[in-house]
Length: 161
Image 1 (spheres, helix red, strand yellow):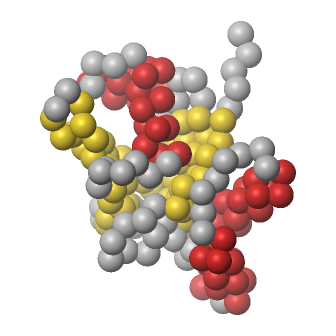
Image 2 (cartoon, helix red, strand yellow):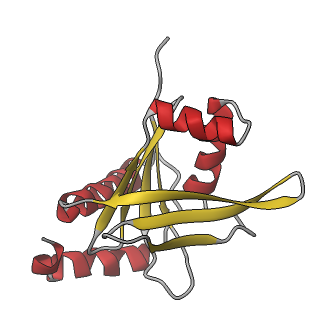
């Protein structure tokens, strides 16, 4: 059975924070996230085992868990509170709230810092450029903000090393 990898990109709008951009790679049984604020980058590459364990904690089949994570990380959902906060040692904690059976719940993942931030940020920007040109992906982004972000990235390259 052939598996298809889907990709997405989302600029999280979080009050009082630099708005990080998340690129997701979505597989049937797991997913990977690359996140940048334009200067630093973080990764969360979940193994199939990690996703299986977390899905079991939420009493969900793996595919349902991956689909629900994708729903909240491909498009920012109204009514959900997102966070991207310091978790110590350069790590960040990505979180968001959602409702299940009338109860407000929160998902959280600890994202590890990526030493090669420039490469990850460049990869995310390349993805946005390719997606914008080809029209293969539905990406919602304020183009003007993206251009400012892009210009800042190349104007001060020494800050991105």
